[in-house]
Amino acid sequence: MRIVHLVSSGQLGGTEVSVIEMAVGVARAEPAWAVSATTPEHGMFERRLRQEGIDVGVRPFPPRFARIGETGHTRGGTAGLVLTLLAAAPGIAAYQRTLRASLVASSPDVLHVHGFKMQVLGALSMPPRASLVWHLHDYVSARPVSARLLRRLAPRVSLMLANSDSVGADMRRVCGTRVPIVTIYNGVDLDRFAPGGACLDLDALAGLPPATAGTLRIGLVGTFGLWKGHQTFLAAVARLETRQPIRAYVIGGGQYQTSGSQVSEASLRAEAARLGIADRIAFTGPVTDPAAAMRALDIVVHASTRPEPFGMVIAEAMGCGRAVVISGGGGAAELVTDGADGLTHRPGDDGDLAARLDRLIEDQALRARLGTAARSTAERRFDRTRLAGELVPLYRGLAR
Ligand code: GLC
Image (cartoon, rainbow, N blue to C red):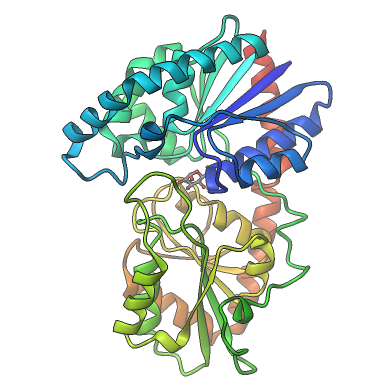
């Protein structure tokens, strides 16, 4: 059996991390199968897959197409986006022809495609005999142009997989019920994302002197996407009432090729200064070992202001046995049971987030109880071997 993953970005965002877990998990479960991936950029995704022994091809998008991103697109609204797409059309057509030629040559049984750009290109480039799987990682209804294109191409798809029930329901509203949609929760490497192991020196990374003994560490881990709630996090820190010493960490950085879709560290520093909390906030920049960063924290915060489709960071922090406070919208709300294995706050509500944080900061026993429960939830629901166990029979059914 040949499985080719097509991925829309080459950086290590949540989608790409989840694809690594799928590819590696299936390759280990079925050593006789050929699992490979194609990405439009050189970068961490490519390197990590190679380290794991997975074959990766890099096929750069035409530059105009690479820069288009529906979330960050503001100039001229939908009409502006359509015009930009039209301008990029000749490059896209040429890309699609070479993609198709390479797929015909590798002749996959299953084309497993992630991200809306590749989902459109993959559907237009299908080699004969292959089954097309669209793996949904985001809400398509929030992107009217992608939604139109996907609705039109959906009849070519054999199976849709969704990273949460919430994302699956969204696609059903867009595409109707003709194509089956199955929810498969993402997997995490629970040996790496484990409670024990190395801890990063976050203060040193941020260029700060070590925090005084007994300081509680609270961190927001993730990319600098506009909707990841960095402002909410800063505003919540400014509203904390606790008298315990705390230090808050912003861990991560920008990554996408698409324009206008992220916050900058400079703007967040300015915001912290405006809120009068510059001395409590540390910026570490991107880290290569997020597990070691999470283990250095007492509380891991997830603060997305829009519904989070899944939230890899949440599953990873739970694997590390941390107390998490998450934004309780979208698929993320399916990951945590409030009060049992984490706490949830209302998306974008910094007062609500501050209240949960105050409670956790004051109550060490609660932090410990939630952390232990989070680890067992992760073992039950987010283990990468469970993920492979669900994918293998689906691939078999499609290849028949
Ligand atoms: C996308 C989603 C994120 C999810 C990831 C993996 O990046 O925005 O919520 O965790 O895909 O499925």
